[in-house]
Image (cartoon, rainbow, N blue to C red; front, top):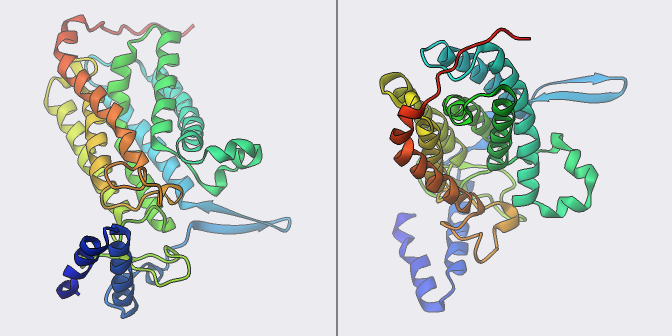
Length: 323
């Protein structure tokens, strides 16, 4: 297959139409996939639902994606309490319990609204689809904004330092990102671009009316980078440096790290179906997911660069009995 790698380049050069080169690659990769050289996703026998039950003639099921949200929130809650047990915590245990409740609402509402605004604005014309969360459609960037609003509300209501709370919550976010991307893989969605790497996977129904080419398992790339790698980086800075004494530094590291990881992985990920043929948003480097990382990267750099100046202005938290 690699011996024919010059063909798409020649097609693009002679015709001036890179799309024909991509079509050639898709055809060749599809033929290779059909030969059985690559792992087929269907051979993994994964199901979107953990289990299904039938009640009163209606079928209900627990989806892995829902379980990923639950696991991310609960484990993040547990880890947040571990962080708050260390000196100079920005809030008490009772605040953390409230924080989890507000954050859960922020994740759901923000994630859904963000998805509609960034990826599916046509849903605004059908309110019932907006409410159909079980059909999928959540945006990380919208969820992150929702959590930030929840933190602002909690801090204002209790007289807490909102930026320091962001620092602690940011350290917990990689758990949810990790489980969420694994759920994307189990669902066989948000797959990568066609490729011939040895670990490529043939996902079903990725090409209308044709053979499915082997693709990057980009969901697993994101789980590894946004979940494991970013989580370890934040762990190091919290437990092995004075970052938690410099308001804004940890959340800045999270914003910068996530932005860079997401921007990088998007080069291996297929553009969202609604933007796949868009001359701008369908171009690697300009995917919607990549454009949305720019404010995160810039904001992260600013917070990191200015964190040292805020160290001396950190307000110690003194817990007061609940009234």
